[in-house]
Amino acid sequence: MRLFASDNVTGACPAVVEAVLSANAGLAASYGEDYWSTALRAKFSEIFETEVEVFPVLSGTASNALALAALTPVYGKVYCHELSHINTDECGAPELLTGGAKLIPMRGANGRIVPDDLAQAIRGRGNVHVPQPAVVSITQACETGTVYRPSEILEIAAIARDHHLKVHMDGARFANALSTLGVTPAQMTWQAGVDVLSFGGTKNGCFVAEAVIFFKPEMAENFDFLRKRSGQLISKMRFVSSQLLAYISDDLWLQNAMVANKMAQKLSRGMAALPDIELAYPTESNEVFVRLPDYLIGGLRAKHRYINEDELDGKAVRFVASWVTTDEEVQSLLDDISQCILGAKA
Image (cartoon, rainbow, N blue to C red; front, side, top):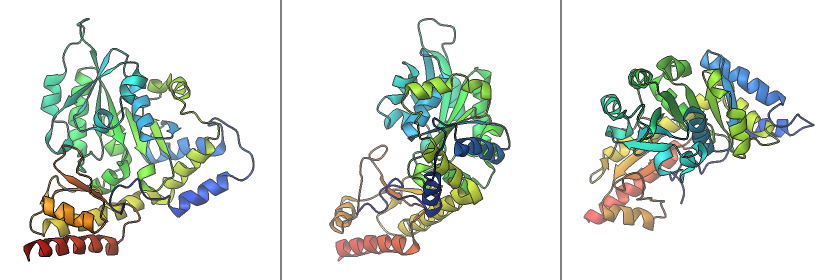
């Protein structure tokens, strides 16, 4: 019933499982002083073509909130899209871990911040009566399943620099966006002006593994303390780092994302070809958002398909493909939809 409900419902891929089992053998230093954590920093530096600081954590919420805590003062403003995960799905964690920074949600087509709107929204610097502009946070891929092109990131980052703001990227589905764009990790992040990346692994083949990646080491000066204080510095960090190390080795993360994106495209094309179905957003990663009539929602539920009508603005149903989604599973869903439509028209 949970098929296509989320990419969080999947298990871990075999290479990640094997890596954890390997890390389980013998003894290892604790709190991130182990071999895997050291090797992880070197591997991420290689992938991003620059020296980075890497801090593994356990969840995307922790990754986002701690990244923002490192970038903004307690009296700061964080500009984000109104549909962003930090604004809608993290139960106030960014506000809690930043010590009270204020999120400034913005509208924008297809889940993306519009550069001109951002430029107009940034104000109040030096005014003691208002929170101070500090960070702009973008999501890649967005909650709507769309992606920012590098040129768009560059434009947003340029505005941020002009106003002395830092740039954070929520990359829970970073691999999916990268697969869509066909650019390098460097081109989509620090070369486009991103300061800190919340790098996701859990949705794309890991058990439970995320990372906060700093492209400017000086910005990570206090992060060790923030991570420890929030309970995200675990003693047996090797079991998180080993997951991520296997995940980003041999292009596994990109291969997994390519499968998920390919299956989402097949599902999106199939749905768009059927009557009474409208795509709510362009399908540019592994999420498909559609508007369905009530009869079709009821029919799919009768066939034990998982339907969540509460996604985003409440006007779209989300279907998510993952690294284990198959052609047969996509076709089965499309067949069920077709049967519901035919039954309603009969």
